[in-house]
Image 1: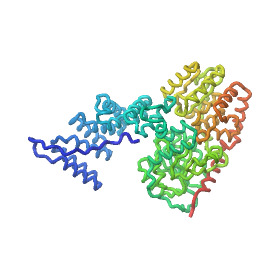
Image 2: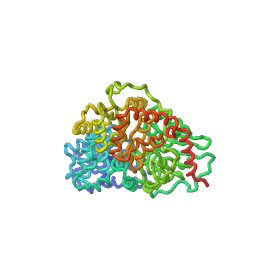
Image 3: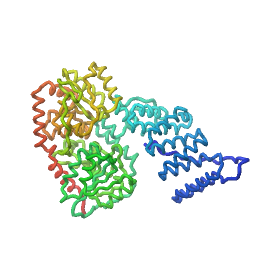
Image 4: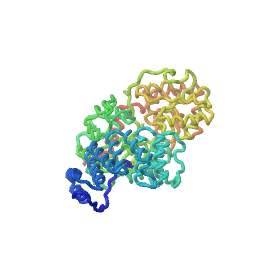
Length: 607
């Protein structure tokens, strides 16, 4: 949903104005500029407009200023574009299109708070309404919803998108953002009735990522993914890579991501990049990640034999760049999550393409040949729900980092926890939580005297919702403790102050489960059918901690209470986990990397 795309207009011929000095006709000037643009000469079109504005006095001056503003924006001359839009508005203060584009240009220049003020003023004046210029009204609401979400003003963003849907329910892209905003705020159920939108239409509009928290039915997840791909991906582009592959002395593996920075994907994969056997493989990194200056980003980039930044390339150019490097196997670490560029994959820049870690579910992308898995994660019975062929590793699907830095271990008091009593925790992002699962956590806390539930303080609206729900359930709100976000080393150290990690369902913990287990904290999970609801179970299965894998909510609650009230069982689980950390396949990175490399060699194609 591109809600900030600039508006463009073309005026109807204006009546002649008497008493004015002879000037070039505005319609002719616009036609001349259009002809230059048709030739691909944007500079000439810009000059035509600027020359005319230097001599013309016309009732259509504001239109020419507006069109020039669009051209300048396209040339990334943002300050000049802003000046032209402001001049158009001065000429005609009720020119809603110019107000909208002015805010869009200001946002693009990095001043999104100022853009929000302008868009909000368009609604407050009101310059646009559902009845007056309804198209611009919807665009303004949707732009506000998008930018406010980026600014983490979730409640206000949700309100804007609700107004948009009330004005026009037939906006699947807006439904997608609105549902996920409700999930982020723990407003349960996330899918509620809006006049004119059936539950089926609400589900159809739910994004693939949001669907992971709605249902563990892999069929529904596949449908959401295929719908996303059909709407967002151009599948008609020509294939770039040769079908028969290349003949290289070492296989060239390319990793594609926007997360080669302080992100969960890099936290898991960095040692994989480092340990891949350079006698067998040549390792490339292609990314459009933010330059966050962290030690993790430096370590990731240092692990590649070749690093290519594609942030400033369009998808076609990025794909051609990958093709030019003759990558044998391209590993997409993004999937169809936020910030993904699935059109790169659509160009088929490598003979074999696979998805790994970034999106825990079917991608629905015909350009993806394989998904890295283990047989617990994707059982044979569920494999038909994946457009990708499972590339099964023999032990475990998830890589780890045995070198992850850990901060000084805190005391309970330093974490804001009580000195005694059992500490349950879940540090997943709040959008993974559901009302049913949170209610189960409340019942568990009520059943275990002096226990507390330790959660991530993700955003104030989610915290308010959870606190209110606890109060309604008769649970003292002091038994919910919210931890602020901290640096990764401090976050890892926190796990030593907890007693049991309670996993979310149907969207399990991924990196967070790995982190908790690495730090010696047992994880209790509820198993489902889909990839996302089997991630933690895969890790526990590999560690031999099968009793912590439950099949129903009732069994999950009973096991949580049993672990919390049976010190001998709790001690046994921790002892077995400590042994498994050093002796199971789950954290055996040299063994994992060999398995991964063997699997890649199996699927690579050569002439």
